[in-house]
Image (cartoon, rainbow, N blue to C red; front, side):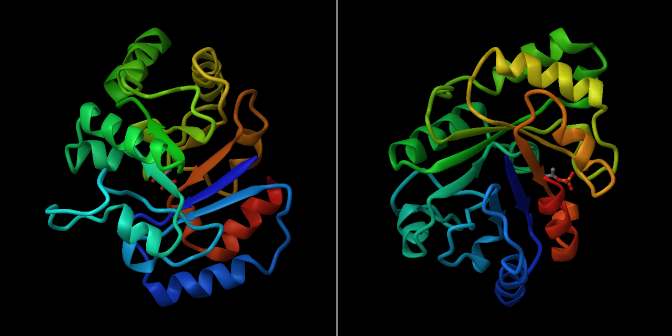
Length: 224
Ligand code: PEP
């Protein structure tokens, strides 16, 4: 069971340190907890991973962070393919696959995000899977440190999670493609996490907004 927090562009370094301290006041030995703060709040901690990374050790990539910078904090976990990077930062599948390959070679744990927009969901599960497959081009689905996060774009940050039926059918289809853990993400809250975690082929959750409050996130871990 994996419970991961994506802070997106929230929290300072000081706030993240306080958050981690409070988070560790509970015992979660049986659960894999992951926290993805912004770059400026990265520090060495077994729970912490990076929200992004450039596929190079270092170099002329203004505004980016590469392996050298991540290694300074012993970061070995990364989020790749988040819909906000695909859609707002216009990251192409080709570039995303390049990142995957780079960080795979570096033996990173990769939480790899996929998810369809609303117009595709409206067309039904067949179209959804067809779409998700385009987001898996160039990705080694047998990589031993891969974790898939299914995050329908229309459910991220909207307060409207996918229905239990939608999560069930989609995870079932993704399971046919990989044996690696599959997380659900998209408006996971305290009031729906329990039923979502009970769904077959749901191996955990990736939580955005609701993870920002450490008390809430701790409760979520306890429910898991
Ligand atoms: C996310 O950003 O990965 C996410 C799932 O966000 P939220 O929980 O806010 O929908």
